[in-house]
Length: 115
Image (cartoon, rainbow, N blue to C red; front, side, top):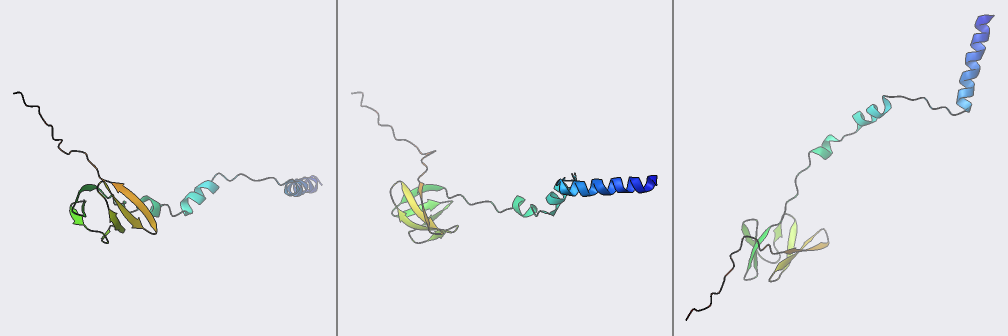
């Protein structure tokens, strides 16, 4: 008889738990989600190429050690305009302006005559 009462108690508590929407905690559930993701693809992506403009001369631009003209493609960027201090490039329909980097250039200093 005691076993039957214990069985009824357990059965009623299980049925009551389902009606109360009790959530059972699984400490390994988060670990399973993390193990099933394919995050290795995101860790090893190819680095983006940076266009470094060093000089603009006679409608040619010196980018990453080579001269280019309007219409040529550099790392997927098509050169659409070359101005005096910047260039305009287009990639996937988006137009970007890249300025001329003037670092490490020599400045010419004019000295006054001492006469």
